[in-house]
Image (cartoon, rainbow over all chains, first blue to last red; front, side, top):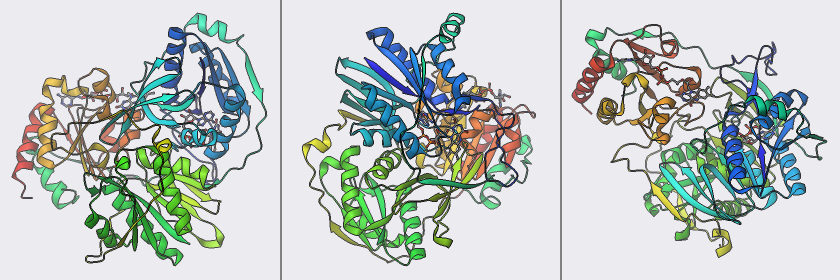
Length: 246
Length: 326
Ligand SMILES: Cc1cc2nc3c(=O)[nH]c(=O)nc-3n(C[C@H](O)[C@H](O)[C@H](O)COP(=O)(O)OP(=O)(O)OC[C@H]3O[C@@H](n4cnc5c(N)ncnc54)[C@H](O)[C@@H]3O)c2cc1C
Ligand SMILES: Cc1cc2nc3c(=O)[nH]c(=O)nc-3n(C[C@H](O)[C@H](O)[C@H](O)COP(=O)(O)OP(=O)(O)OC[C@H]3O[C@@H](n4cnc5c(N)ncnc54)[C@H](O)[C@@H]3O)c2cc1C
């Protein structure tokens, strides 16, 4: 089985988010980048399936050279090889077209992604890739197993419940907890990752449709009003009469 | 040209998040000098569809194919695409729900449109542009995005828009048939399991959320969270370690790697307020923090706080909440 896992390269979850002085661009100064946390669930599940059934796991990132440390990290966690499409990923549709082109060429049985990229919070690349390839996209899935060699069984979240879906290969799915328990690379993984193949491809011609023109930050809160614990019930009165939320 | 709003039905009614989308869509239509049509899918009563007039919708297209009562992406996309074509829709509006995001992204490809999810503002349309604001970096910032395609697709963030209401207005309901074939249902779910909310409130649609963290010590103490939620008509949630420890189910876990909520009121009990937890709750309108540690980081993000032992404080809150007249 050939599995393609798509990873985005995102600011660490503890990052302070700042923009350049004119608020036109994200300020990367002092920001650490990590593998998108949701994508780690997809990656580990792919590796588990490979360990159980054989096959290969390829990781794919659409991004510039500064994403390579995290691509290597994915190799250290257990992927076999990697592809980086050398382009600035400026919008989801652009990224989706690059992923679809790689997927088509490589004939993968399964294309796994994260539920959402935690930087731009789009939740859209998976649906777009499925549509571009004309195959089902099961999103967001929290369980993935093989029924037989050509069929997978997934559980996906819907508001207020879950759906159990069976799909034929190939398909796209996005991962969320508790699909797997993300792994930390061990020493041996880190050593072997250095020599695993990382192919750099040029992008296919594609246009972006969403133009990011500026950024802002939420207004600061007015500060916290403390309530005497002896008189805790007062909170409920304030929530009704002052905050007007009850 | 017109604005098309996709509304989701549930148990005969229209979801609250879809009423928000309908209100948003009508306002966009007004801005563009056109009308807003809704396309409804799922189990909805006809009078509930007509009532969409109260949100400013003039017509509702409804495909009553009962196979659509459960979510099947391909079939939903076909129905909405058909409606979009029939109405010559240039702006499509969804709620940013799991279903909305799944069909929105497929439609963006099919209709060659520009998509923005998690949208928090009406469009600014000066200078031939179509700029909407959307939440990015997990609630830590907003971005302005110009949708540079003929067809614009917008998924609006939940609880970010008021439901507008003009009493007495009704929409005309028309049948729509997308002539669905069995192939469109090939990926239909084998099984749909709804959570037993015991008459409780669905977390993603809730206006009030009561959430518990590791400070509550164990699942046997969750009656505190549940009773307060019940008294307030709230949904219950938890921090990640609480679901990792199996004290609570995973679908209650909010935060960076869980569900994002933006209720009017979020009450955090025994949760420290780690940055990854805040990422899922920071767009709540009012935040209350109850923690025995005055240095807990959550107080910095709170509007109201109580320093003290949850086991003493929460029962007092339950009592006060029960005493409220509804
Ligand atoms: C203005 C702007 C500036 C950006 N700057 C950078 C940057 O400096 N460095 C950088 O690395 N990226 C950058 N990006 C790209 C960004 O990280 C996302 O990859 C892209 O915007 C898609 O975001 P989304 O929220 O729509 O993805 P979603 O639809 O939420 O992503 C879902 C899943 O798709 C997959 N996926 C998403 N993006 C990629 C990708 N690029 N490669 C492989 N798989 C992917 C992942 O599995 C992800 O979990 C930028 C994007 C924008 C809009
Ligand atoms: C990549 C990544 C993703 C993550 N994603 C998430 C996520 O999605 N959601 C999430 O929640 N976390 C997430 N985390 C974990 C996060 O960093 C914190 O570890 C977690 O939120 C802590 O949960 P907690 O506040 O319940 O527990 P703790 O941090 O242990 O806090 C317990 C709190 O309870 C208080 N307390 C104790 N006893 C009492 C009492 N009797 N009365 C009142 N208060 C009391 C304590 O003072 C303390 O502040 C993530 C972490 C990483 C690295």
